[in-house]
Length: 113
Image (cartoon, rainbow, N blue to C red):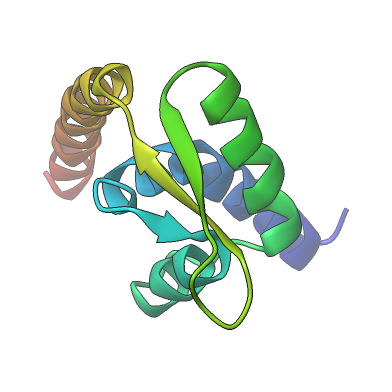
């Protein structure tokens, strides 16, 4: 495998690991799918719609999200929001993320050293 292909595959693995945390963080206020794709992209966390929608369904099935249809606009939109269980899981994942980031920072500091 050439360098660029290896790097691309590994970077994709890193992104995949952050998508759930990103979605839970963003859906603390209700949003519909397309607005979520746009917001994550604007924040430097791009996610494809064909990745996002199955994830939203899975998180809803796990009880981490709830959805409701908004029928008052030009077209119906399904809004998603974090449930109390989702908020609990989000806070726990955020703590794990911080511990991992601190560990990586220590590794990189040793690298300088």
